[in-house]
Length: 97
Image (tube, rainbow, N blue to C red; front, side):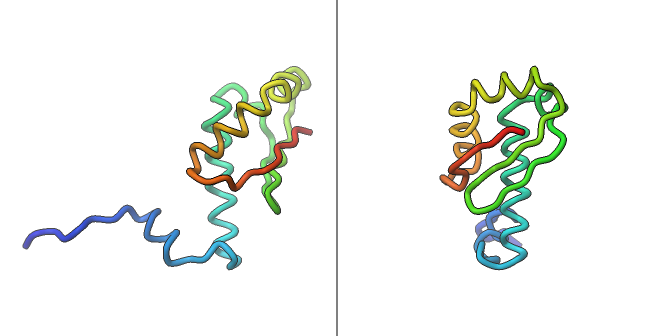
């Protein structure tokens, strides 16, 4: 038996579950959190205590003031990297607290 066209499960879920649904928003938030952690690297990710996404705004609570200043100074690059990883312009604003 030959395989038909194979599809990644993540792509299939994005097609089947609309972003407007509760489940779709939850999956989108998880993808954004993962993209953020990947974009900032392991040391800054370890200093990140909480990541939340709502209405185009990504809020990140940082445990260290040194990391918070470093991330704030590189906010534009991080924002571009997150959206690049996602493949869409979902994140409009990035706030570090």
